[in-house]
Length: 87
Image 1 (cartoon, one colour):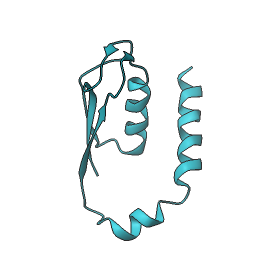
Image 2 (tube, rainbow, N blue to C red; image 1 turned 90 degrees about the horizontal axis):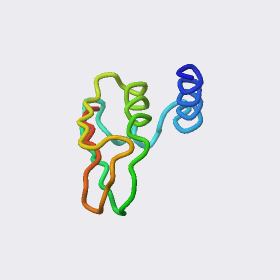
Image 3 (tube, rainbow, N blue to C red; image 1 turned 180 degrees about the vertical axis):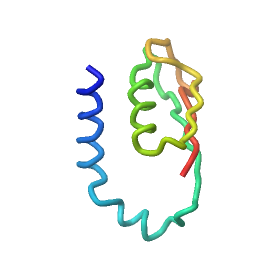
Image 4 (cartoon, one colour; image 1 turned 90 degrees about the vertical axis):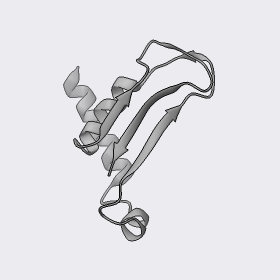
């Protein structure tokens, strides 16, 4: 199963990024860092945190992922599922 997930992630990255995001490459300094959070907007059950962690790891192993919620958790508007920091 893990091999299939790895192939799916690789295929999606190749399709989405290809040979690079030319706009970002031209306008964002190479050493820039940032932070993003997954802010919940509707009530429900969370899914996709484990997949996000795998994708972040595949993109850049130095990214820092701080999880506050896990797959299967009940969520409500205003909750933060995770914060990711890095390049």
